[in-house]
Structures are given as C-alpha cells and as structure tokens.
Amino acid sequence: MAIKITPLTDTQIKAFKPIDKDKKYFDGGGLFLLVKVNGVKVWRLKYKRPLTKKENLLTFGNYPKVSLQQARKLRDEARELLSNGIDPQEHKKELLEQKQADLYNTFQNVAHDWFKLKASKGLSKGTLDRTWRSLEIYIFPCIGQKAITSLKAKDFIKALEPQRSSKKFENIKRLCQRINEVMFYAVNIGLIDANPAVKIKDAFETPIKGQMPTITRDELPEFMKALSMARIELQTRCVIEWQLLTMVRPSEAVGAKWEEIDLDNKLWNIPPERMKMDRPHNVPLSAQALQILKTMKPISGSRVHVFPSMKPPYTQSMNSSTANMAIKRMGYKDRLVAHGLRALASTVLNEQGFNYDVIESALAHTDTNTVRRAYNRATYLEQRRIMLDWWGDFVEQASNGNVSISGNKSFKVINS
Image (cartoon, rainbow, N blue to C red; front, side, top):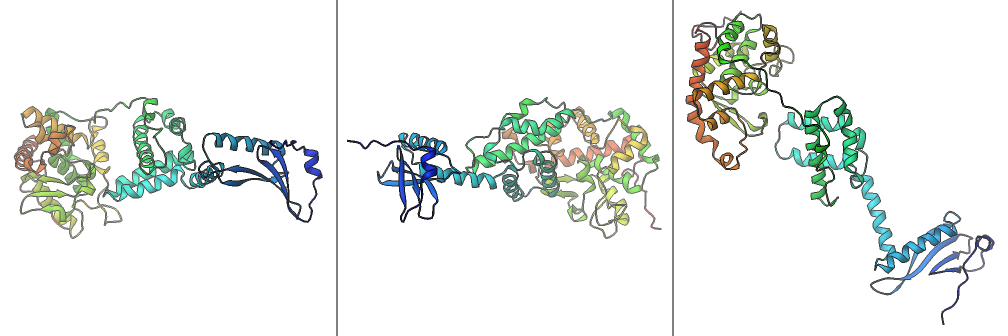
C-alpha cells in the first residue's frame, strides 16, 4: 500500500530547523525539501530515468528563492517530460547548452563566420568591403546581438524599414540577398532548421531598374567633338575613350594596369578580382585602343596603372567617378553617364548585325542560359577581335578622324 504524503505548507517550511544530519521533507510526486545541517533548504525531485529506470535526483534550487509554488510547478513540468519519455535532467542540460550557444550565436557572430568563408572564395576586396559595410550600417544595429535561433521574418523586415522609408529598394534587394546568405549558412552548419528570411524580399516593393542614360549612334559625332574641346585633363579624356573602345565598366577601365596589357597579342587581360562577376575577362585591343595606350605611356611613366590618380596618393588609379564628372561638365547631365557608353556600343553593334552572344561576351555579361554559359567564352575571342576592330573604326569615323585621340595617328604627347 502506497504511503500517503501530506503536502507541505509554507508555515512548516519556515519552521524547519537544521539537525545533526540532512533531513528530507516530502511534498508528493517525488518532490522533497532537503534541509541541510548548515540550514540551507534545497528543493529536489526524485525520479526514475526513462531508459535505465535507475533513480536519479534533479535539483530545482534553494528555498525561499524558489518558493513552494514554483517548486511544484517545476515538478509538474518535469513529470510531464517523463510521461513523454524525456529525462528532465538531460532536458535541463540541453536548455542550458542552448542558452550558452545563443549567447555566442548572435546574427553578427554568425555573419562574421559566414563572411570569412565568403572571403576565402576569391571575391574582390571591393565587393567584400561593400558587403560587410552594408551589414554593419543597416542590419547589425537592429538585430546584430540577437540569437540567430530567435530571429523571425518580422525582425529582418523591421531592420529594413528605414530603407523602405527612404525608397532605397535596390539597397533592400541587396540586403535581403546578404541576409539570406547568412541565414542559409546557419542552416547548413546546423544552427537552425529553416531560414525564416527566405521570403522577406516579397514584403518590399520591387526596385524599378532604370536605364543608364546614353546617347544614340547619331549623337556620337557631337559627343566626340565635345570631348575633344572639353576643358578636362588629357588622361580623363583618354580614359573616357578607352572605356568607349573597350566596352568595359568605368571601374574596370580606370583600374587598368600595365602588367595586364599584352601588346604582342594586342590583348588586355583583366583578372577576376577586378571584374563585377569575379571572372577573368580578355579584351582584344583595336588600333584605336592601342593608340590610347601609346598616348598614356609617357603620362603614366613607371607607375602601375595606365590611368594613375592625378592627386595623392599617386600610386592609386584614377577615381572611377572622374569620367562621369567630366561628361556632366561637358553638358551631358541626365543625357549620358560613363556606364551608358556600354549601352551605346551594344546598341550599335546589335543594329549592325553582330552576333548577340559575342556582344554579351564583350560586355562580360553572365548568360542566364546555363547551356550557353557553359560554352567556352574563349571561343569568341577572334570574333570579338573582329567586332572591336570594327567598333574602333566606327568611333574614329564618328570623330571625323581628327578630334579623337584614338583616331589621330599624329597626336603626340610632349613632356614638359
């Protein structure tokens, strides 16, 4: 016959005094109060482990910090776990470990580990710096110190709300992508089971991608004349024509280094770390492009860059915004930007009937068609050479052969 246990009362507990040995006072359901010889009163639960059926003790804490009511609640929770085959002591240990893990595995710390992995994949320093800086500015202040296991979609959306208020939808798109990279990394290393941020971009307006301002083929002669008469530095004029002739992006144009130029094969070999898509890009050099190099050689001297900075530190390349500022001063504000020169070249070459894939290859675009993307880009090299030679002649003709640096075969630089 089971022993009937009378539940304890607060009055009794307060009256319990220590004796010459530890003494247990049972409350029922395995819960008891242990009064030690030093007067400390400890709540404990006696139970049998679900698997081994061996008796075990679970400590809840000291009285009065843990009250009678709290101790009974903890007992009931433990017995609920036992009814489901869960050892309450192991469960308590797992909760403690999870709490400690959450203290370390904040969004910012996990992002830091993800970033180290991303940096090891050979991305350009500029790309990496922009990625981390954007998280530092827009995301970490809001959710950086939150446990990654506690984050919900609403937390990320709240962090991005200031960007929505500023209508910076393109920035939101990039931030959503970076947040998802961090969260999928957390999934892959086992910190979370699913990524709650996977659909957050759908909570924001879709950015409207505007066309880069550009000019038509009929306006090119007027532009070349304006360029020849503009009150700008010679190297600025050169870099604008260089970009026009080679069809590269502004940052790729100003970053050109002499070591990348293969004069014997008339080829410019741009390494992957300087390309937007982090892939090497080879540019066949037309006669007009080679003339730009000939013009810049005495200006550049022994410096690393073809288009060196005109201000300290002279060891760096020209700023990528220099061309845009010059074009604006030439009267082309809202009509043309440096990046728009690529659109001009693409339009003219497509109208002329050149192969679309060859044009896209010259622009260093990544084909969305996986089959065509897998095709070896090097096979287009000779076709691109023919196309860029034609393009160089077209630009020269638009300049009437005398106002373009690249088209003026008699143009010489006199060192002062």
